[in-house]
Image 1 (cartoon, rainbow, N blue to C red):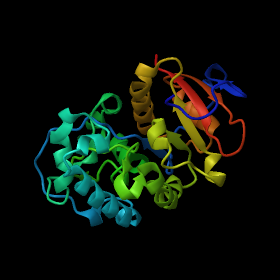
Image 2 (image 1 turned 90 degrees about the horizontal axis):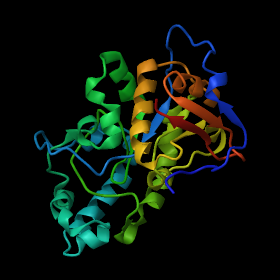
Image 3 (image 1 turned 90 degrees about the vertical axis):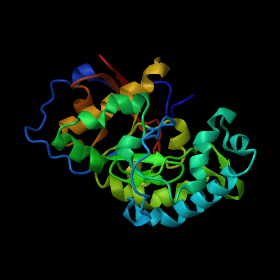
Length: 279
């Protein structure tokens, strides 16, 4: 199952009861965290200079990034690397990128990840105001880098959060504590809009007061449309820029374009669930 959270509604807020609620005339959303998974599909673009680690967002993650990169390079150089990384032998060319991360040309995150979600998000077509918000609010959870913003420049790589990476162990466990030090600060006082798959959601689970503002975007009964819809939701939020510091306020924004139902957590520490259907 790709989702986390309750599978049956406990307390729901259908969108038809909220569509007519007033919205601020002047968008003022300053703090929000939209969490995205990476994509296995990556651009074939190969130009550019190597990445500068000191320029990548969330420098607090540098030591963990270095440990993962070093271990990944060693594992990727082994004959049985595909099996160790849980991928097909047909992907040896992708795995080869892992061996030369320090010298490989770097690509902006906004251009690196492709695939269904990123096609729907379509960062390249955003106007300047929307793109500025996207650069501040979007955070990609990466098995190699932990957390990235669209403007960060990194080399192509092949690694999933589901991998048990040699002596480091399961990557979701490797990243859990480091991400817990940076992502709550990135969220500020705004809502956390969780568009991650379950594999990447396991790397950071909001705790305490932050969890009360944690909303998972779910697409009911449409697994094949989940990534596409989440990409559209993330884009819509960046376009609207409306202040949404509570789950209910977030639903009002999303309901401008989508059919939505908001479900309250059954217990503290679990996410609100925003069931979302594209028109």
